[in-house]
Amino acid sequence: MSELAAPPSLTARAGFALAMAAVVGVSNWLVQYPINDFLTWGAFSYPIAFLVSDVCNRCFGPRRAREVAFVGFAVGIGLSLWLATVQIAAASGTAFLVSQLLDVAVFNRLRRASWWKAPFWGSVCASILDTAIFFSIAFHGTEVPWLPLAGGDLIAKLLMAVLLLAPYRALVRRFLPGAFTFSGSSRPVASA
Image (cartoon, rainbow, N blue to C red; front, side, top):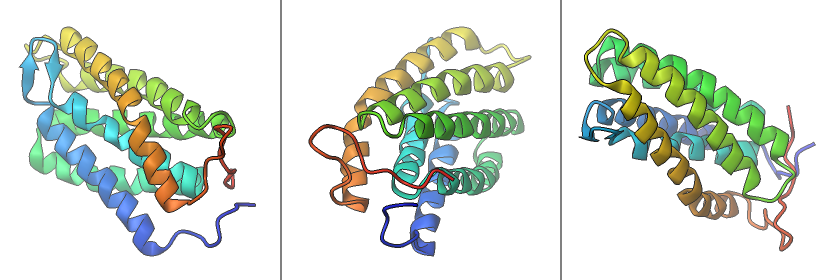
C-alpha cells in the first residue's frame, strides 16, 4: 500500500496531465526549428515530459503516471496537429507513448534505489527510444538530414536528464515532504 495520506486529487491529476500536454505541444513546435545542423530547440523542452512523468510516478505511483501519459498523449496530439505537421504529430504520438511507458516501467523497477537512479535511468532509456522513433518517422521521406539532428538531440536529452535531477528532487519534496531520507533512498509508493 502507498504511504501517501490520500490519493491524488483531480486537480493534481489534471495539473500533471496539462503539464505533459503542454510539454508535448511546445516540443513538437520547437523541433521544427534547428539551432544548427545537429540540434533543435525541442531537445531542451521535451525531456521535461520525463520530469513530469517521474514526479507523478514517485508521488502517486506508476498507475497514475501511465494515466497522465495517456491523457497527456491525447491532448498533446491535438496540440501537435495544430502546431506542427501531421507527420510530426504522428511521430510524436508514437514516440511519446512508447517512451513514456518505458520511462514509467524503468522508473518503477528502480524506485527503491537511490533517489536519482529511477528518474535518471528511466529518462536515459526513454530518451534513446523516443529519439529513434521520433526522428525516423518525423523526417522519413523528407530532405531533412535527420540522423545528425537525432544524434544532437539525444546528446541534449541525456544532458537534460542530468540537469533535471535537481528540479525532480525539489518537486518530489514539495509534493511528498520527507520523501527522501539521508541515505538517498525514498519512501515507497504503491506499485500498481
